[in-house]
Amino acid sequence: MRLDQHFPNPAALKVLDVGCGVGNYHQFLRGRIAALSGVDVSGECVDRARNKNPDVTYKVSDNAELPFANGAFDCAFTICVLHHVAPH
Image (tube, rainbow, N blue to C red; front, side, top):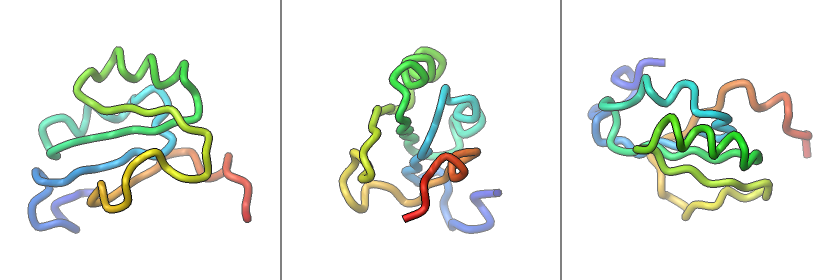
């Protein structure tokens, strides 16, 4: 997805990666958005992501609710995660 097709000023966006894993894709957003955060159930993966991407805010959570305030992000994305989530 090209952010500039959906948002008038992508450089001002605060973005969340849900199920971020080791942060493989975060380098591609560097310099294109204002802030990037990631959350994952695996502390080991988040530690690896932090080492690769020190400019990204990462949190570990296995809770059904995200560990961020409501309205903290302009948009969120997920890659290869939904098949791990049990339907409710």
